[in-house]
Structures are given as C-alpha cells and as structure tokens.
Amino acid sequence: MLNETLPNTGLAVIEKADFGLRRIKLIDGSCVKQVGLKGETLRIHMSCDLTLGCMDKVLVTDHHIAESFEPFSIEPDSIYIADAGYGRGKKFEYIVSRQGDALLRVTPNHIRLAEDSKGQKKIDMVKKLDTHEDVIEFTCYIHATNKKYVPTRIIASRLPEDKLEAVIKRKKRTAQRKQSKLKAETLIYA
Image 1 (cartoon, rainbow, N blue to C red):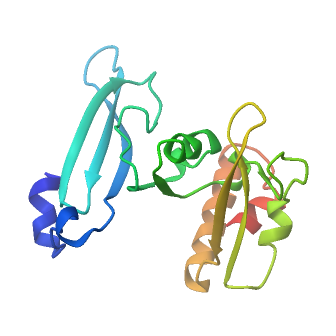
Image 2: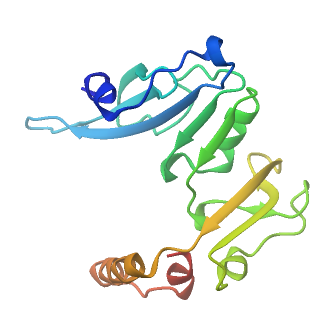
C-alpha cells in the first residue's frame, strides 16, 4: 500500500547516481495481533527508501524480535530515520559502526549522555531541557555498550503552546491510570 501511496504524495523519485545524494531511509516496526484462540503477536519490520520512493525490505517476525536495525542492510553514507523505539545508544552505534547516519527520536530516560568519551561527566537532561529556549542543540557522547560512548548531536525543540496542554493532559491521565505519581521531569521532557 505504501508503494502505491508514495507517488501520490508528490515526492519525486531521485536517483542517487544522478545527483550524488545520500539515501534516506525510514525504518519502523509495528505489531499485529493474530486472530484466533492464542492471539499471538507478529512484528512487521519495514524499511522505506525515500530517495527512491519505495519500500526496500519488509520482514515479519514473532513478538520476541524487538524493533532493531539489525534485520536491514545498513548502507554507508545513508541516513536512517526512526522513532523512539529505535532511539537508544546501542542502536545508534549499530548504524554509525556501519558508516551510516541516524536521525532518531529519543526518550531522555532511555539514554545516557556524557560530555566526555569515557562517560565520566554525565549530562543531566532535566537541567539541559529546563529552559525557555525554543531549540537547544549540543554535541556529546551517548552510551552504547560496555562502557563505550559514541559521539552524537542532540537537538531538542519546545512544543508549541497549543500542543503542550494536550500532552500534559495525556501524561497526567496515563499516570492516573497506572496509579503512579507524575514525575516533574516527565513534564519537562514533554
């Protein structure tokens, strides 16, 4: 369906060889519950090449295989875009170690950042984000695996005021439903 829809969006198909552009790929995974007594869950992993305007890989697994870049061939100099399910240091390192670049949405509680490559000067994201600036940007190191830190760039932007109220309401409802206390940092991250 995506291949049929993309041409109608007005996205032009660009051949990498003609313009020397880097490939841009969207990566995502979705869960689908099967019909039946057991109702097991399948996960669909997908890669969409925006540069060519087509899907280039789809893989169906059981629910034990988490969202990951590993099912995909990572092409050097390509840019991989993914949501917060992929926004972890280990997954970022996987792309970078294969000479790719990644644009990932992250949840601050799911990453560890440091000012130095050894991870000795930790970055407090609550302090960094507790500002009235519309956009903050800084370079640092993200924890990947086994005390290894990889250089990265963080860009965070403030939600528009008209969107902020709805997000705060949603966070409060979620905390209430889970019967947990809403943390101050959750509101700062929002």
